[in-house]
Image 1 (cartoon, helix red, strand yellow):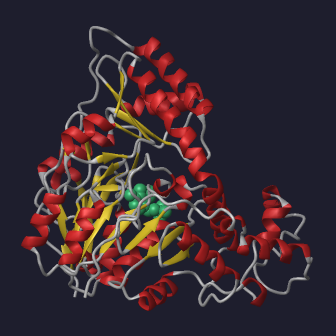
Image 2 (tube, rainbow, N blue to C red; image 1 turned 90 degrees about the vertical axis):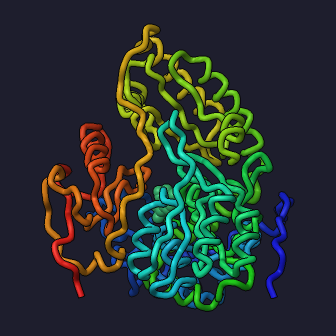
Image 3 (cartoon, helix red, strand yellow; image 1 turned 135 degrees about the horizontal axis):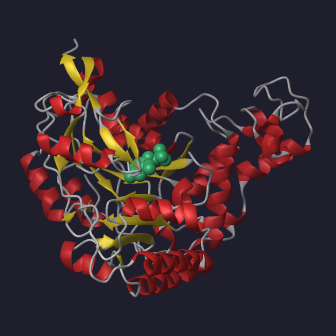
Length: 501
Ligand SMILES: Cc1ncc(COP(=O)(O)O)c(C=O)c1O
């Protein structure tokens, strides 16, 4: 019998409980004991004086250790790792939390392998990250894509509506699970609680890509976090907005729809047997900081972000993605901490050029660019001063490049039609492939996924039939100064020559 969803309202965090860091404390104690190492890693806590590893500092090197009874074991944690994971689960209101040392990518793989069997259908938005496609290919899962709401002004896809998910579930009642992003790269948030309730009525667990939502838990001004909304599993990138080291994430699990023992066995299958203590302890440290200071920091940061947005809207040529308009247009919530800045045609630069200029002339690194926008992420570590630096740079760019008669630059991206899925994702893995010039690829089955990174959302996925529209789009982005993933030679694309066995 399924329990009804209980939306957990914003709850106070027990700061006394969260003031300890069991894993980090154990590491510090071990370091202080000055043990002679005959174990790995072979840099022996940085003992080789000729190795430039010293650059990272004695403290880092002395904490880069491997498992031992004193420091617990990631595979079967019973000591300090287990305690630290319990605290993480408590903070995010989950039943279980697992440290991940291969990012949210590993969390996404774990969610899909834990829930889906080969051949199962998974309902998911089209604009998912490549890690989701790769996980489906490995697990031999069939994607049932739902086209998200498209914002024609900004040229970006947002999230799924409740009605879209409902229609898809009705059409595919045999689907195994529903996969939702909370939020999208650009901060769009679906009504996750209602979607979860609906999915549960159909006995489908809800798997959440929360790569960009690790901070949601810490302010009532932000959207609901996955666990608060009742979702079954979430892969949460603490390394993005939570303050831990790059590559460290968490997998959160709750409820009875997911087999928790299986989750742990899948994690062990996918994780290195030498899970990094630096990464894991950074999760322990970030958890404590979020628990003790997260609420207060976001309470201070959010008004500063709102003031920043109002000031940007006063700069000729720049406009912020606006939460109010967003709600009216798409009935979705916006993560207001995301800085998605639209550049209108009165600025004689594309988004890619503004991105480059911010780095070269103002020493500011943005998260990403699209033809008509740039996007920045703020986190627990940010404050008003940093926002002001970006504001002043944008004001300066506007003074330099604004033309009131309207300059012309790259067209806004349009939404691409979903091409025919001619071959399963896994089948493509084993097919024979060959490169062809992109102009000659119409009608061929694509053997790789092509994308701009970041955000890493594919333009065409492996197994899909290439259309003229896709070729035109790829040629357009090939002329832009951005990272493209998919082809070694961006004028060529790998196509399927012969189906594998
Ligand atoms: C939406 C989304 N999902 C998943 C991932 C993968 O996360 P990670 O880099 O932690 O593996 C990313 C990374 O950028 C992402 O943007």
